Image 1 (cartoon, helix red, strand yellow):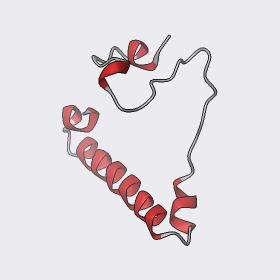
Image 2 (cartoon, one colour; image 1 turned 45 degrees about the vertical axis):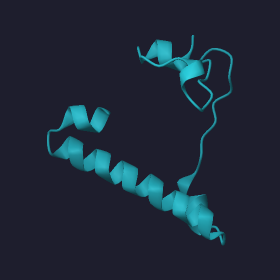
Image 3 (cartoon, one colour; image 1 turned 90 degrees about the vertical axis):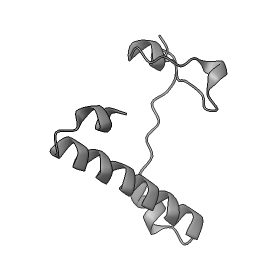
Image 4 (cartoon, one colour; image 1 turned 120 degrees about the vertical axis):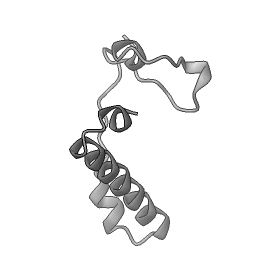
Length: 72
């Protein structure tokens, strides 16, 4: 089962520019955002900033009761 099917998302593979994983066959992959922060590469440091801002915004929206915005 594909991730978009499991979560009832409305997009399909031809419509997106990333790979939609197969939850039963693909390996789990986790990214440690701290490694981006720790990197000497400024581009990777920026990735950490983007991750941090994304999750900070989502948490702020949840805490503010804006669940639709947080989910989006």
